[in-house]
Image (cartoon, rainbow, N blue to C red):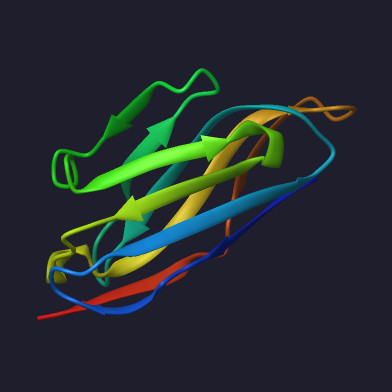
Length: 120
Protein backbone atom coordinates (compact mmCIF):
# COMPACT_ATOMS: atom_id res chain seq x y z
CA UNK A 1 0.00 0.00 0.00
CA UNK A 2 1.27 3.44 -0.91
CA UNK A 3 0.30 6.54 1.02
CA UNK A 4 0.47 10.13 -0.18
CA UNK A 5 0.59 13.03 2.25
CA UNK A 6 0.12 16.60 1.04
CA UNK A 7 1.10 19.80 2.77
CA UNK A 8 1.41 23.50 2.02
CA UNK A 9 -2.15 24.61 1.45
CA UNK A 10 -3.63 27.69 3.06
CA UNK A 11 -5.14 31.12 2.60
CA UNK A 12 -3.44 33.65 0.35
CA UNK A 13 -4.39 36.91 -1.32
CA UNK A 14 -4.81 37.14 -5.05
CA UNK A 15 -1.44 37.57 -6.71
CA UNK A 16 0.33 35.63 -3.98
CA UNK A 17 2.14 32.31 -4.04
CA UNK A 18 1.93 28.93 -2.36
CA UNK A 19 3.99 25.77 -2.65
CA UNK A 20 2.35 22.38 -2.22
CA UNK A 21 4.29 19.25 -1.37
CA UNK A 22 3.31 15.60 -1.57
CA UNK A 23 5.39 12.74 -0.21
CA UNK A 24 4.75 9.13 -1.12
CA UNK A 25 5.62 6.33 1.28
CA UNK A 26 5.23 2.57 1.44
CA UNK A 27 6.56 -0.38 -0.49
CA UNK A 28 7.49 1.63 -3.55
CA UNK A 29 9.69 0.16 -6.25
CA UNK A 30 9.24 3.00 -8.69
CA UNK A 31 6.90 5.89 -9.39
CA UNK A 32 5.97 6.61 -12.97
CA UNK A 33 3.69 9.61 -13.00
CA UNK A 34 2.91 12.05 -10.21
CA UNK A 35 0.45 14.85 -10.44
CA UNK A 36 -1.94 17.33 -8.95
CA UNK A 37 -5.69 17.60 -9.41
CA UNK A 38 -8.09 20.05 -7.83
CA UNK A 39 -11.76 20.19 -7.03
CA UNK A 40 -13.69 23.37 -6.38
CA UNK A 41 -17.08 23.32 -4.61
CA UNK A 42 -19.78 22.04 -6.95
CA UNK A 43 -17.27 21.23 -9.66
CA UNK A 44 -15.66 18.07 -10.96
CA UNK A 45 -12.09 17.15 -10.09
CA UNK A 46 -9.77 18.47 -12.78
CA UNK A 47 -6.18 17.96 -13.76
CA UNK A 48 -3.78 20.72 -12.76
CA UNK A 49 -0.37 19.30 -13.69
CA UNK A 50 1.46 16.02 -14.12
CA UNK A 51 5.09 15.00 -14.31
CA UNK A 52 6.62 11.72 -15.44
CA UNK A 53 9.62 9.96 -13.98
CA UNK A 54 11.71 11.41 -16.78
CA UNK A 55 10.59 14.94 -16.01
CA UNK A 56 8.10 15.54 -18.80
CA UNK A 57 5.32 17.83 -17.69
CA UNK A 58 1.84 18.82 -18.76
CA UNK A 59 -0.42 21.54 -17.41
CA UNK A 60 -4.01 22.65 -17.58
CA UNK A 61 -4.31 25.70 -19.80
CA UNK A 62 -5.66 27.72 -16.89
CA UNK A 63 -2.44 27.35 -14.88
CA UNK A 64 0.24 27.34 -17.55
CA UNK A 65 3.00 29.88 -16.89
CA UNK A 66 1.72 30.49 -13.33
CA UNK A 67 2.23 26.99 -11.85
CA UNK A 68 5.29 24.75 -11.94
CA UNK A 69 5.34 21.06 -11.09
CA UNK A 70 8.57 19.36 -10.05
CA UNK A 71 9.67 16.20 -8.29
CA UNK A 72 12.58 14.72 -6.38
CA UNK A 73 12.67 11.05 -7.28
CA UNK A 74 15.02 10.12 -4.46
CA UNK A 75 12.44 11.45 -1.98
CA UNK A 76 9.33 10.20 -3.82
CA UNK A 77 8.08 13.75 -3.52
CA UNK A 78 6.26 16.04 -5.92
CA UNK A 79 5.83 19.79 -5.60
CA UNK A 80 3.51 22.37 -7.08
CA UNK A 81 4.73 25.95 -7.05
CA UNK A 82 1.74 28.23 -7.55
CA UNK A 83 2.39 31.88 -8.43
CA UNK A 84 0.09 34.75 -9.31
CA UNK A 85 -2.80 32.96 -7.66
CA UNK A 86 -6.34 33.91 -8.60
CA UNK A 87 -9.61 33.47 -6.68
CA UNK A 88 -10.64 30.87 -9.26
CA UNK A 89 -7.70 28.72 -8.12
CA UNK A 90 -9.55 28.14 -4.84
CA UNK A 91 -10.09 24.41 -4.45
CA UNK A 92 -9.02 21.29 -2.62
CA UNK A 93 -5.80 20.12 -4.24
CA UNK A 94 -5.13 16.38 -4.46
CA UNK A 95 -1.85 14.65 -5.13
CA UNK A 96 -1.80 11.44 -7.14
CA UNK A 97 0.87 8.93 -8.07
CA UNK A 98 1.08 5.82 -10.23
CA UNK A 99 3.84 3.27 -10.12
CA UNK A 100 5.02 -0.15 -9.07
CA UNK A 101 5.35 -1.72 -5.63
CA UNK A 102 7.87 -4.38 -4.63
CA UNK A 103 5.33 -7.12 -4.09
CA UNK A 104 1.82 -6.02 -5.01
CA UNK A 105 2.16 -4.93 -8.60
CA UNK A 106 0.96 -1.56 -9.82
CA UNK A 107 -0.37 1.09 -7.50
CA UNK A 108 -2.46 4.19 -8.03
CA UNK A 109 -2.89 6.37 -4.98
CA UNK A 110 -4.45 9.67 -3.97
CA UNK A 111 -3.68 11.97 -1.09
CA UNK A 112 -6.28 13.27 1.33
CA UNK A 113 -6.31 16.74 -0.20
CA UNK A 114 -5.17 20.15 0.96
CA UNK A 115 -7.29 23.30 0.84
CA UNK A 116 -6.09 26.31 -1.12
CA UNK A 117 -8.12 29.49 -0.72
CA UNK A 118 -7.34 32.64 -2.67
CA UNK A 119 -9.04 35.82 -1.51
CA UNK A 120 -9.75 38.72 -3.82
